[in-house]
Image (cartoon, rainbow, N blue to C red; front, side, top):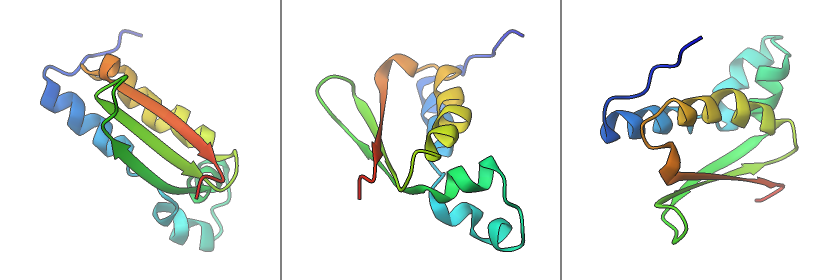
Length: 100
């Protein structure tokens, strides 16, 4: 399968920003109504996502996890958006287990 790349820096930034919206509040209602799967459990384990500017890369995304299940959310949501953006070489992701 051939992946499409974003056409501009702005489009790449918007795509990645969408992927950072994965904190635990997103799955509260599906989880309470009985949707218990890796998607809901991994999203529940993400406590906070922070975006910072650092020296190594212009954008650093810190993902604070309550438990390691959140790695699934990072790999399946955020990383896929980063890899298909036009700015993947400018972004670094760091997962912090119990980082709050």
